[in-house]
Image (cartoon, rainbow, N blue to C red; front, side):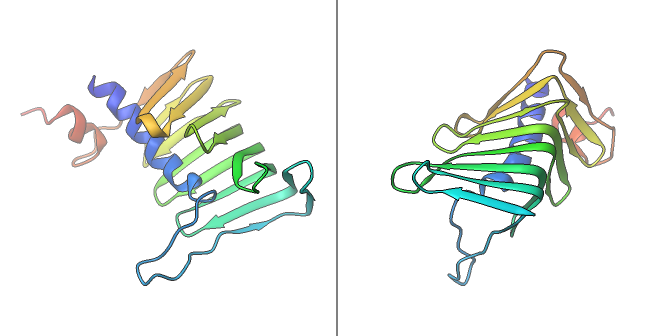
Length: 168
């Protein structure tokens, strides 16, 4: 039980920042926070409801930074974001948390995030990896399969002590 909670915490804390790129946010003083996406090329098709950023993609948000080779954003008929898909050397960084994968897909409505292609989620020295890491943001759960591997370092006051207690 405690081990699965640790896995969920590692994944959900990291993904929370990436999700903010799709949501509007306001700062404490009420000013709207800005998300900036840069790339070598942008193709947008409003009739087909998508935007494709290609080449050296960087998403900078007050809560996180994402880099990849491609980022596809799909919209519904009202131009509301439906999905975000980053492909190629995906890195998602938020303070002391980092996720790496070849592909990361986020479905806004379901809150489902899928990291695939040698995914790895790190917080400090702690690390979670598997063939595919799926985070269900709206349900506060995570699924790693197959070949899940969790490494937790015994730092004083760190994640291991917080979840497994101290050996006295």
